[in-house]
Length: 183
Image (tube, rainbow, N blue to C red; front, top):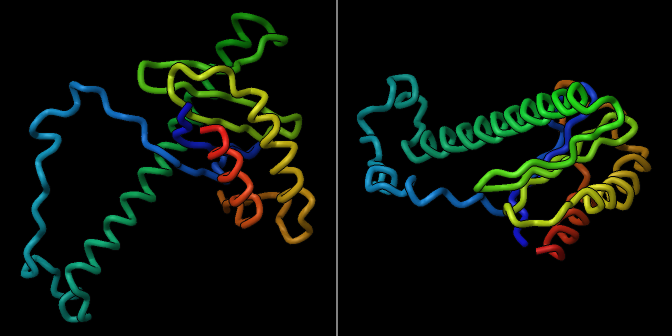
């Protein structure tokens, strides 16, 4: 079984933690010649006058732009995942009543597993489509990793205002070890 990524959302709908292990593979139709064509680099003369005057090299500018794109992509992914989970959870509650719970959904490329804690933390994990239910795994991550390393840590903030993420090395190492044990 492959785990693609993992997200934690707080009660204010902010993504406070995300981790990607493997990207879901693209469908075969997406591997057209134009999709695999290498991108050319911009010539150094295309630097803006302020960038050139500041002595910033084209590689530094390209690296910064690449980092910004990756950060924006991961933020966008987190927002899309939360929006999808929020919509599906509300739809399940309206159609099935308050006792029914949204647990997972599957597409041809991935399966999203969902777990919500009593304190309104939301855990989402993307795996390969054929994976069994990961609800118990998400519950174990909450109890054995989140509570032990984040909640019981006196230096960890109670609220993660403004989307300030979780910065706890023990939690990250434990999560990585736990998920790699599943793979």
